[in-house]
Image (cartoon, rainbow, N blue to C red; front, side, top):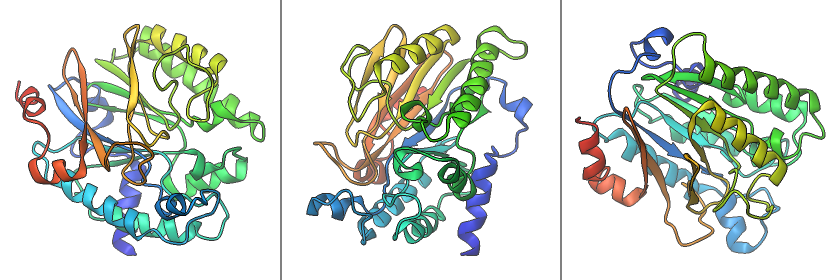
Length: 313
């Protein structure tokens, strides 16, 4: 397990090869990164058997798919600046029977990620519990790193959020309040300074703000209307370009009032017509362009040629 823990510690530190944090605040030209979601080790068998409340006693399929994703990402040229996994890393809820084994095997599967590609982990409802507690949040942080934080890469400010605190923080209101205060400070600095003005501001969370439109009805797969509208307003005022999420196990989302809500399907279990895959995101001075690629396509042909050409500008 030593090698797995080494890559894991590197991922938790969120270091970007060869540059200091101040240097990462400088725009240095177009780059790409990978957004993935919901490897959710253990769900595929439970979904087939109609027992999604179970913890999932088999996860060989998800391990193989995660390894396939890692191998495909490693072959990309130019190399992605990072890969972010937007929650539901495993299916077993905190402190349940299969949790330890699923987390262990996911770390091993991620061990093959090229050392030049930092990993960023986002917390999901299965990682924290549908109603998180201080204990389950602490368990996640000990295993995967902070549940909310910011980092700069190539002149872009990235905010990683714990969306479960938006969904149901009834058992940990102090943690919700702490994230709210931190987030407000981050958004104010992004829009008003002082300091470097980011080329773009991107948000990563597990639960989407919405699946299709901002005025849709509340659902298990989106944030409640009042929370959604509040976040949309705050993000818009701060100049957030895109919000990347998972949770839905299908591709969805849409652009509204200049903010792109990106909902990506899963590395693991599919609940719709999409295939196992990840999203390639290209960041230019003016745009954030993204496209979902199946694992087979990414493994065989790499990213689409038009995206690759944007990186050569």
